Length: 356
Image (cartoon, rainbow, N blue to C red; front, side):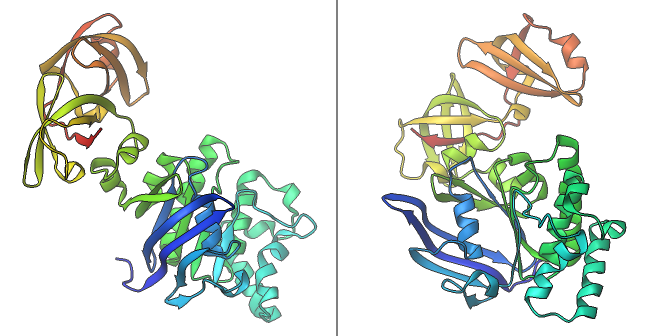
C-alpha cells in the first residue's frame, strides 16, 4: 500500500508559450511511494508538465505542492527532487563516483558521509566496481544507471524521469524497466515517469495519466485506462482497437445498448451520458475480446502476423469492414490461412462507445 500523504499535488497548473497554451489546467494528486507515468504522443505536454514540477519552467497559473509544501515559486535546487534526463547529462570530465556525488557536494554533505552514500548508490544500481571510470568508458545501460544513482543519492522526495530509456536498444530497455521498478519499490521513492511508449507505461506504473494536446484526459491504473477508457482519445491511443460506427439504442442506468454492424452491444453508460437514443456513436472493440468462432459476423482472413505467443488476424467483413483478432498459439496460422472463411464472434467482449 502506498502512503496516504500526498507527495505531489497540481492544482490547475497552466503553461503558455506566447499564444500557444502548452498545458491546460493540470490537476493531479500523487500519493507517497506511487509510480505515476505521464503518457502521450510527442507534443502532448508531458515534458512541459515534468519541467513545471521540477522548476525549470514557471507556471502561468495554478499551484504545485511537493510533500504538502507550496513550491510554485521555489527554485529547482530547493524542491527536493531527483532528475534523470533523456540524455543522462553526465559530466564527461568526472569519474562515476564524482558524477554520482555531485548533488551531495552541492548540498554540503560531509566527505565521509558522501563517500558512504555514493558507495551505497553504486551498489543499488550494480556498478560497485566502476567508480573510477569516466562516462565515455561505459555502455549506454551503465550510463543510465549512473544517472539514476546520481538522482537517488540525494534521497529526493520526488524522482522525475524524462524518457530515460529512449536511447537504449529493445532488450536493454526491457531490462532497465525491470531494474528501475525494483529499485523504486525497494526505496519507496515517489516517481513521475514520462514516456510516449504505452507498453512501458502499462508495465511499470501504479497509475497512468494519459495526455493529449496539453490536457490530462484520464488518470487511472493500467487496467482502468485499458478496459474503461473515459475519453475517445484514450480508447484509441491505449492498445489496439477496432472501431465500428453505431447508434445508441437506450441508456439503462450504468449500462447502455449500442447497435453496430447489425448487432447489439452492452457498453458502460458513462461516456454516453447526455447522448439521446438514436445518436451516432463509435464502438471500440479490443482484438483479444473477439473470437474466431461462434455466432457473429462472416468474413475472410486478408492478412495475419505471427508474434510468438499469439497470432493476429485481419478479417474483412461486409457488415463491419476490417476487424483485428488476437488469438493465442501458433496453431492459429495453420487453422486460418490467408483467404480462409471465418466467423467473428463477440461473446465476452467488453466494448466501450463514445458519441460522434
